[in-house]
Amino acid sequence: MKTLRQLEVGQSAVIVKLHGDGPVKRRIMDMGLTKGTQVYVRKVAPLGDPIELTVRGYELSVRKEDADMVEIND
Image 1 (cartoon, helix red, strand yellow):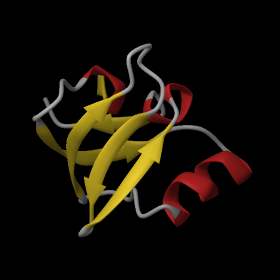
Image 2 (cartoon, one colour):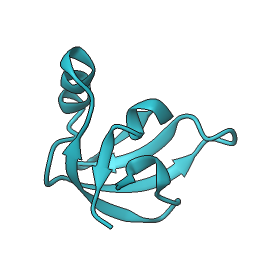
Image 3 (cartoon, one colour):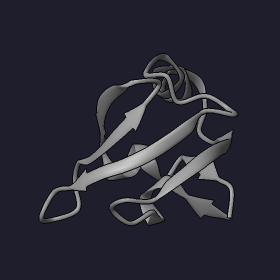
Image 4 (cartoon, one colour):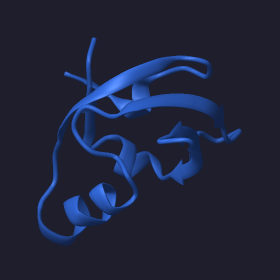
C-alpha cells in the first residue's frame, strides 16, 4: 500500500482509498481528498510537515499523519 506521504515533489497520483474512521476521515473528505481524485505534490516543508498539494484546482496543505491515511495508486 502506497500513501500520499510517500510521493515526492513533482509527482502525481490518484486516490484509491481513505483510511481512518469517523471525524478524521470526514475531515479528509471535506478537504476534497476523495476516491478517484488526482493529486499533485507541489512542495514539502523542510522537516516533511506539512505537504502542499494541488487538488481539484486549488492548493491544499496536509499534515503527514493525514497524508498517511490516503492510499494512492502505485
